Amino acid sequence: MYGYGAPHESRARPQPTAHRSELAARRLTIVERRRSRREDLGPDLTSCATGRLHYNATPKSWMLYWADQQLFHAYARLSPSQSIDDLLTEIDRDPTNIFRG
Image 1: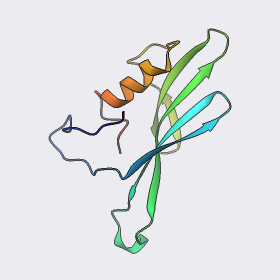
Image 2: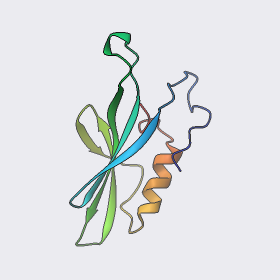
Image 3: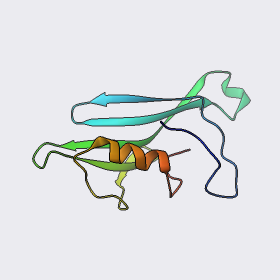
């Protein structure tokens, strides 16, 4: 999952080195890690949150959010789902190019 095929736009995007997730109570944050574009920062990987999955216990559903800096916004193109796989598929598909830095 989280494959990187041809970009959806004409501009090329830098290829990430890795993805990881950070789990907290009722939420999962998707983090992209890649080498910095700035040489003065050295060879260390930079981290950037790209999305968040939030679990709502009352309707037992997951909601998808996209990241803008350190703020998260509801992703309006997908309704909440009881299956986390639906949200992960949308992140992988990324029709709006907001889940990849």
